[in-house]
Image (cartoon, rainbow, N blue to C red):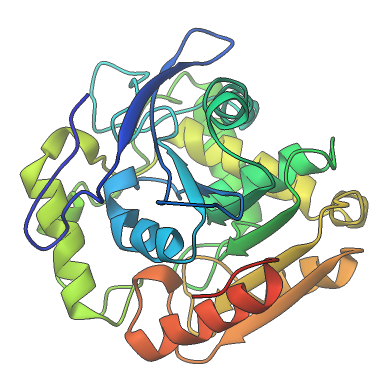
Length: 314
């Protein structure tokens, strides 16, 4: 099982690679690390759409320094996990229930047997929405969750969820669910420019992520398919109902960038108000990828993380 290992983003020492098989037979790439000496529990790193485990190596080292074990997963259709379609650039699911199967398999096959409790989630964007979907059914999954930029609604850089959902649903009914949406930019991450990007204001970390994709091209994917967008809109529609947020009984810290254009900060605020055990921090000037942002913003994130997660200190 291969991982990109480049000078600007070396593999953290002690990586243990593991293949996970979901309930519907999809092969998933996972990894875990344990710090030297006593541990304070395990943080489960769950990335966003189009991300891979390699993008979080810096975060892994920071968690290991806090004496947490770390377990990380590549969702189906991206990273080093099995692709659904013949074109490997198309990250596709028909329903977000598929991601829930991935998380459940990861917990059963990697986290519970190999990693010390208690278990905490650190999930981003799509991964954060999947965490919330699983958490609404069971409070036993994680002791606490830290969710960055959860995908509860599209931000200012996309049309409204209603428009996207109607268009994607109609095209999917015509048998075009596996296709890219009309006008989608097909450039992969390594071809994007730093200027005016919606992800991060930190050029060094932006270039590092491009270097990962160049070093191991098979972990990168292109835009979402029409079917993925339709599934995401249905998942966000469900999450927009007040009873959804109220059903999440796991203490949760939600962190969002004030200038996030991928996910709507206002929708995140509304969602948190409906939670029973949720709190929110807005990082001024932050874009979508808080953990890839400039150091002062990351410092705000880690201060909030350390205050929220029991036993988290450096």
